[in-house]
Length: 404
Image 1 (tube, rainbow, N blue to C red):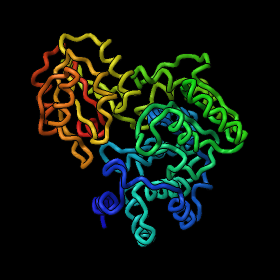
Image 2: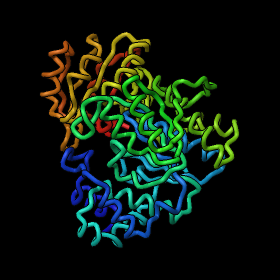
Image 3: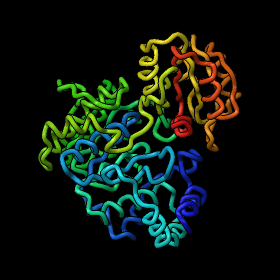
Image 4: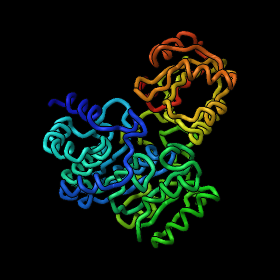
């Protein structure tokens, strides 16, 4: 199989939560453990940092990678989901894994995948870990896919564990209270390994402290720290807290790496250049101003929509699409009523039909037109918007993926 055939086989043959939803979620780590044993345990051959949390995982992971790259290290970065190409998930110093490596890895292990009925995510984790071991990275930043305790990445013993924050998302898997979700994400805390908590609430703080104490894991609460506010090329308001989380993590990593203040400064200023991160308060054009953001749950959207409201514009246009398991009653009340809406369905099987979204949005006095696709919604919004208007694109990672 060539690269395109290989990735199509992966997407079609193996369950992928981002595309199909609930049935792709595995209930234990036995498949991942079997896979890494089959691969001779590549996860033990490189240092790692493990990053979990409801929001901010990708930004935090990318900032950490950028700073470590500026400090002169060879840095693996594993993130999900991808926006355009599968290879975005697995990078070293900002460069994506080669098509040839992906093809060869699947070719060599396809029989094992089929015998074990591995999920898309389990296979991808195995691929990333094998690649980082083969390439002898100095360190890899490993972003959790979903949750923590049962996530396929949770077989590493990192230098530091990081939990950015806790909000209500993926409640059908992780639980429907902040305490239950915090417990799942705290599953990445390892014995004698320090953990950084980015943001906490009273009900999540006690969960983190209890689990960390049980595992003799030194706990560091980043939101309580006074830190230097470095400038960053990621411009979302939510990055303020992510930067504090990163700085606390870097402080702990100084025991293992030499990281100068200049590396920190340059790392923050060059996150996009160093890692290729997309879709975080990303400005796509001027006249009219167009910004897209991958925020997709109440916790993330509240911050982003407050930032939208602070912009200067004559009229606000919002291109909105979501997936079909989204709790609309938790997110639609956050959206401004004085905007023109363009409702669309992201082009995946989990995408929510735009007519359903429009109907539900009307219950919250959000008015607009139904579009046949994301690209149609974008073209219409640009046509309708005047030079001094503002266009926001969001609601789902998969809507943003079709625009950037």
